[in-house]
Length: 110
Image (cartoon, rainbow, N blue to C red; front, side, top):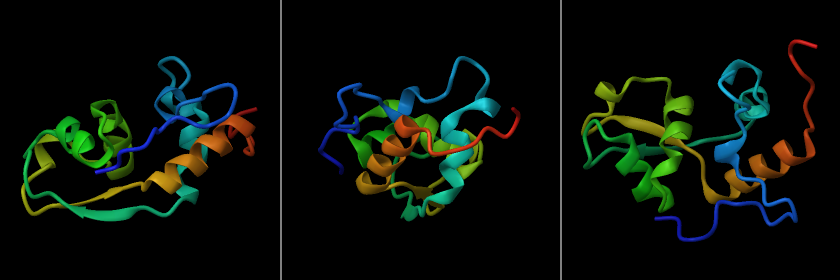
């Protein structure tokens, strides 16, 4: 389980969980760059249909279930024992935080 802080060390304290602006997930900085990062495999061994508890197991914080849902593009009912899902490591989340803070992307819709 990840035990560090998932917040960026920048003075602004930006957190990847808050990188979706309002309710428009299709115009978020995170969504624009998330495909550029390598994810890791995780086989679900417990917490069937509970991405929140899987997020807690992986990151120590249930709020990262949305990131798991976004990366895996499967419904809650598909989080079954034996299913291989994707997740980002601490290093990758730190890089994502930095890129979202620095906004090293261009908007899809200008």
